[in-house]
Length: 336
Length: 278
Image (cartoon, rainbow over all chains, first blue to last red; front, side, top):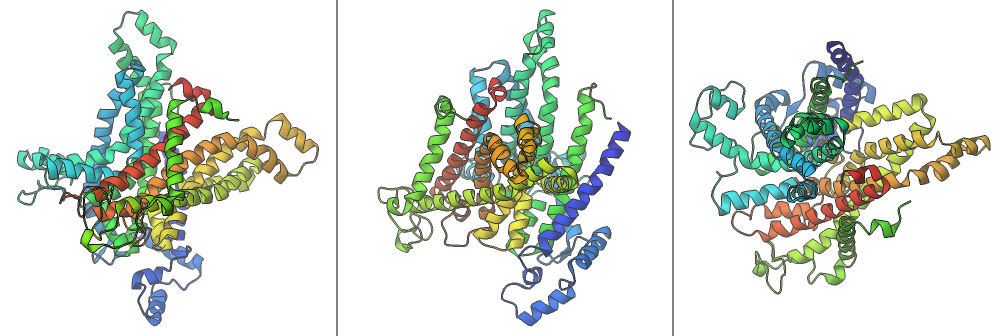
């Protein structure tokens, strides 16, 4: 498995090269003028020319690509005008918030989707099945930004059950001692129950909102693969052995239907990163997604470019991990 | 090929087809059906809740939300069709060429498509729209470009299978030119799966475009577009003016719902295996 992992990481190199070239093309080859993006559309032509020369945008494309590669090799992701900091340091500061949000929404999605998908398949055409099918359609049709606003209107504005949808923790409460940057984990590590309760309450709405699309697709996938697995001979054998229906479904059915679902879960990580941009904007969540929206609104291009690059790399790494997990779930999987 | 009668036996497909048809008709007839011009400002009527004169209420400029939702349907139908059209026009030939000829060119095309697929789609669409520049055209191109690899991959897979069939071999033996084989044999035989992808792609395109418009990458004010309308309504939802957000959101959700139901129904019809797990 280790040899396979190393080989797969090596295979990511050409893919990474493709990702870098595409990110480069995004800024330098498409119709938009990067110099104009930095100076603003109202700038004097002389100033735009000066900026163009300063950043080497007037050089041949191959020279520009080489310079871009050198810049990336130095870990330099550019400079964010709107914050006045290097993009890399802005990312490091904000990434834990995004990680906490995406991980929580994945956990919520699995908690809801796994039982619903299993029940839907085990009791086909029952109420559970109808709920599972309805949710998988509705969940993928409802835009995150709309759902987020409806949740705010209901749970904050109308019912007052959840705190104001601003940030990760209420104003009067000290954030927990920094260990991982994930407030929930850090509050547990420092046994700060006040911070834990408040950060969990802040996390609930955005994480649920972001999880909706994943709930839909994972429910659909688990249900479909479970329906296939239920028909297999080993399931009949397990029943014939006298195992209870619950044991047959959970012990034999679930583990076998998890592999196709796992692929989808891995692919959903990309969806969650994209969705985080929208969710963080709505809930003023101080993560990378909100930072990217701020950059879009202030026409600050470097952070958007960096986010594109980093998210593609992260997406690749997560999918590699998922592939390696196949072998853990199913020992028959061979990594040749 | 898909038989319409068989297709219409599936209740969910009929619901999907009806929803999509209703929105297309509303989009086409918007100038006739809308009681007000979508950009007509009436400051004295601002933020009115739904009533007999303004069925969906009015926004902060006094504009009639019902009329704006109807006109928004035109933008949505248009953006969905153009962006999926871009993806088809570029993606299908690329996939067909890569699958049919294979070799280094095919490999290069498919690796380029894989690199595009390595990006989370919404983030790539945002980066593209931001680099092309503000405006609906940027959003359209961005959503279209992001969808290209999906069509290319599907067409590649179909072509690789179809090109091994006997009738293709027979055509080649008769000396029929490659482009003729691709156009007259490969493309028609890949039509079914492509139709499913187009339908599902339209739903995804509506979702991505409205998301781009919501975060400010897309139409410019005062154009009536559903995502942008929700963005305007965002500042008012806490003060109770829910209608500015709820109606455009319902419009987006029902449209996407319709396309996804229809796409699923078409897939069931074309792939009996998928129907067995329904």
